[in-house]
Length: 333
Ligand code: PAZ
Image (tube, rainbow, N blue to C red; front, top):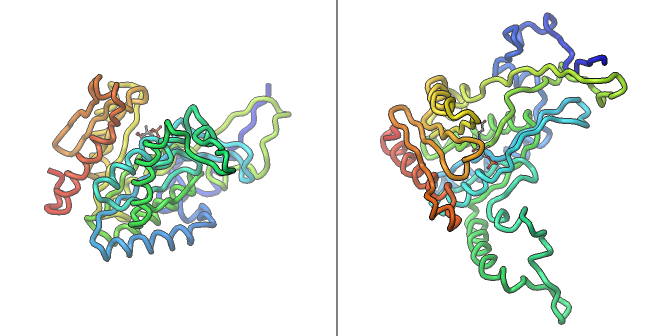
């Protein structure tokens, strides 16, 4: 079987771009990759939203949610994806809105969205919530009316108060360009901005300069991919883009022994304020909050799990409390 390199090595031709081990400097990344075509529209919407809430002196949270894709070809037919469906981000958005925040929900296209999540996706399709009436109209099936009414009230309120802005990404480069730009725009709010980085962002990618242009052909047999490491964007986010805001990153692991040490290492390395650690299998019931001097496990009891209590209903009030401290004293404690 022959193998094929999708990432055409350009080592030697572009020595300033990486450290020889395929690690590109975050600043250089934006110079050698193309900004998404809809970036100006993204910025226009976000600028207007931030101006509106700055004038009202509101707290604003930028939530990133869902997984990024990593294209394998410049004219992309195939890409690498990950497991995240955006549940954490969408659920958190609702609790942030309840806590009085304005929410910028930067999410992967077609991932789970606040409020809609209660009905879609689920075992039932959209049409299963409705029924046709004899008068030739459509109505919500009686068993869903109460819940739909409750959710709709909250959704309508968020929209009427202009407190929910939906923005999208799909690929890793789209995410990174929008994160950089979005963080800089929110920085105008200084301490009143929070960055809640729940998206599952790829750690590896193929820079466009190393990607094949056309669809990878299968006629040559198996495929070997060479992926570069994604630059560590938390570093410039913390030190430049979002300097005064409260930055909360997530750390996902599958090996329990690694969770806290890696979360703490991230905190020390990037110097931000909070890391929330979670395990793949238990992420809906247990998280660990790590700040510079504290470590706190938040977990749902059996009763809470049985009555559909969501862990985000505990995460967000805790973060709102930390954020208040941050605004008042520049400290999380
Ligand atoms: O989107 P989801 O609800 O399926 O999963 C949420 C999550 C596990 C992606 C999030 O809680 C998280 O840990 N995000 C950061 C992942 C990481 O890069 O370590």
